[in-house]
Image 1 (cartoon, helix red, strand yellow):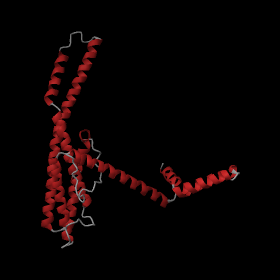
Image 2 (image 1 turned 120 degrees about the vertical axis):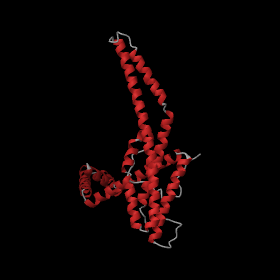
Image 3 (image 1 turned 60 degrees about the horizontal axis):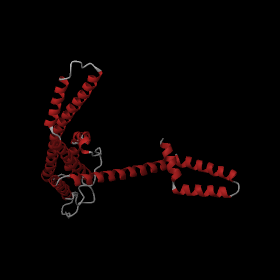
Length: 291
């Protein structure tokens, strides 16, 4: 399967296409197409075989494919970022911006420790765990959106109405006539029992959503507290390498949170959280909500 991909890339190479089509056209116009065209095809097959199986060419094809996948992932993350920031209410966006400002301060503290006296107006070109901080910010932003989505779900779903439906259906099943074994009443019973099961499932989902909402709130508070703690340690420890390791530790501690968010896709509609995150730390502004 991989070999076919390499052969296809070799064939679609613009220089190969130019040579192949030119040679094929010359063979047709030569008046001896029955001889020249098979020779052209044989040469093309030999060229594709040599190029398609060459390790350097295969590495080039793999690199190009990985580049395309990264570009596609970046576009997807950017669309998700724009959707989140346009959907979140202003208070949640402000909460995120506050944490982002704290992360920028943390990065700048580490920079000043490594390069005393360096201008602080811009973040340095070399990264101080920017990928880790971007990931923490991305998790935080998605947590805020998950909280917002669950809040809307809880607001629009009436527990009392579902419980009333369950009670009503249970009473209807109890009131079925004695000849309940007849085909007609069997169909009625099946319809009522199916509706009752659906209502019970809705009630269970509501309870699960309420528990998840509480869990997400706790995770948001935990992550914000972790970032504050990192900032304080950065000032007190004066050790850039220690700060770097702590950023990695906090990112690793969020694995369970990431799994929880992935399980809540039914409420958020967000894509599965990937390892890479958009550049949130360096971005001038993230809040693009239009009032």
